[in-house]
Length: 112
Length: 112
DNA sequence: CTTTATGCCTAAAATTCTTATGTATTAATT
DNA sequence: AATTAATACATAAGAATTTTAGGCATAAAG
Image (cartoon, rainbow over all chains, first blue to last red; front, side, top):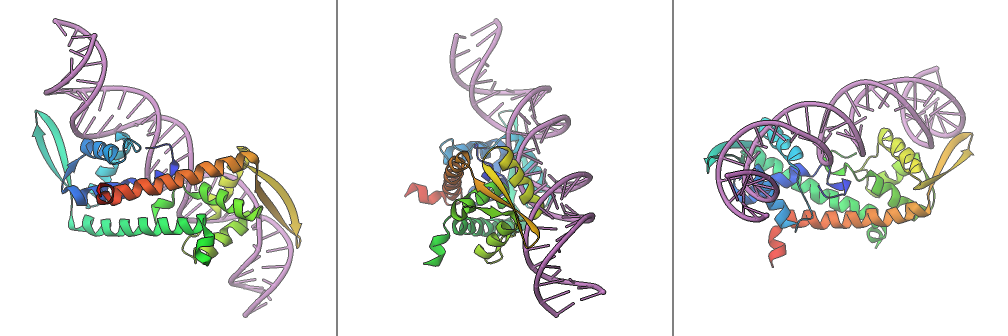
């Protein structure tokens, strides 16, 4: 997941946001979508992704729908109502995080 | 450290950046400075801070200078040459992280 | 005189991610 | 034809970072 430790903690935000845009996605598709959107810069590893999806499902933020395509299983995930609400929170937290970091990194800005 | 998991992984960046601005700082001072700069939003816990400082020192990014003020010990930390170089890297990584996240969070932007 | 602030520290547990596998099918390459 | 790459899921050991929860000590404030 890039070589920067900053991405720690952002996986859930990424997953939730992608699902607001794509209605339903399966794990492998998420990894490909992220790679594509970031021009290969960000690589979501499956060892991180699948446990995260399972946890989000257990928490009731995601629902599952299993399909068989070309004789291969696909587990589609979609946001629940609760998931939609939590997505709003996560995106606000991201905005807040970015703002806070910019104050810390560029403290002069806040004095002008 | 706020209630957002996004701050995970940013502690080192914060420490290094503060030290480029303040020349030398001690642990407790760092916690207070961060609180002040973020209007209380970000609270660096000592359990996270001190081990991080010790690690940065062990890696040769920080140097120590111990002083006794009002009969209390203060361990001042300052950036080494290596520390200055690493700070540049960390700040670039932060910029890159923010950009990448904005693409993921607002993919429409990248198509216009 | 007891709490709050200053100032350092560590250690167990939780969290999140990496690394390394494992299974299985289909498509592409040699 | 046989092997590798791509698709698709999964888990488990270990590493790294942080939280939580303490501990020690001095100075100031209530």
